[in-house]
View 1 (cartoon, chains in turn cyan, yellow):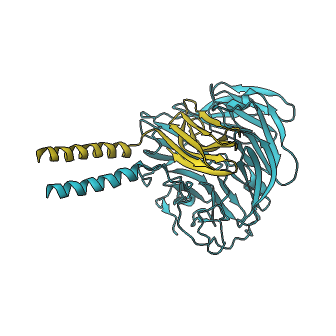
View 2 (spheres, one colour):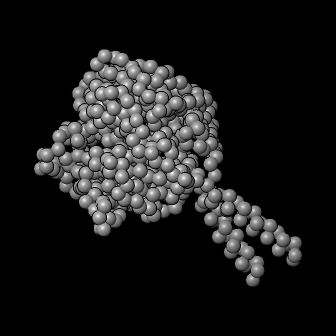
View 3 (cartoon, rainbow over the protein chains, first blue to last red):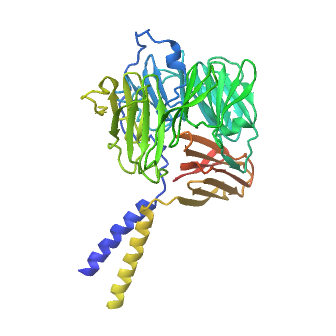
Length: 387
Length: 128
């Protein structure tokens, strides 16, 4: 009896051991969605009340860089190299493919871009790809059809990092702070390239500051936050002047034509006045158990997400609380993001106008939303995005 | 009889240790693979020393050119979002390698390693 039991245990343990020792699947993340339904028929909205820039400008407060699009056709999100479509953001997300019999898990699928950043401009979705040391710019129709390469950006051993903004792709080669082994990247240029013509990329700023900073483009000004000392610079594309604004800034920030905002860890929200050049602490925010905070600024609300986990770098073991502030810096909602499963990294995705979108697992489709009309009322709740 | 039970129990203990080790997230993982292509030996070594380093190298005894590409997701504490990037070695003969080191405010979350004997991808592995 004991022998039989031991043998059985051995077999079970062996299978378990082998299964858990296996490396990650070769499937690309995000491709594990087995939903084979086609995307719906996609049409241009008849709502002409929003200016074109509402759809084409870089979305500064996103959970990622150029991963979510709000367009006149609906909402698009890029997850694991596949583009998903949702009519309103709080409605079902499906892979952007209406090819019959497509299982939406191969590179033949219309939703597949191979890219991690997407942009919208004049009825097209744009994306970059990196193959055999060549970075290219590509586009497709809003329904996922007609993928085509537009132009080669450059030959390099590293892919580009940047975003789409009003018909241009702004980018650098590589990512601030990284050191490379076996290859070099001496390129210290910030480029931009028009997405819808055959023109070549142009250099808009050169200097080592590029290799060490996050950049934000606001009209003719480029704001740069240096990652090492959190100093803030501005560069005028008109005059070519690079000016130091502050020693006291933060990596993630938000800029309008007249003001800049950032959140400094356990200090609070700072404001930069473009006209006067002053930087002031607008709202002190401190937590006893600071953990980690991220702040997303949008025109109507400020979303602060506090990760109370002491080891905030344990990204898959979060304990998140969302605070919604108005622009008088008053908290109007406090809510625990308790729908996020342990072992997953869930988070705020974006603000799409009427709704705030969340994902309980950012490696997968958004699955919760807040109706902004319910903020500050008894009706306030997280709603599930239903299939 | 007793010795037999001891053996079985020892084996069980070893398996339990192995199993528990493989379930607990291990930050440093590596992979080694070797095979032949057109009759010549090639090998691929992948390392994921999370959260700070990803590295890959490949050697091939044939005359065809080879390359290795790493695609990785990096979470940046300063910018509070993840980004995905690719690096690729120069395309060369015999031996190629490429890697990336992060700063202390960045961490690698996963990496996919793609090994090519031009023009064919001969091995692919993902580590985290």
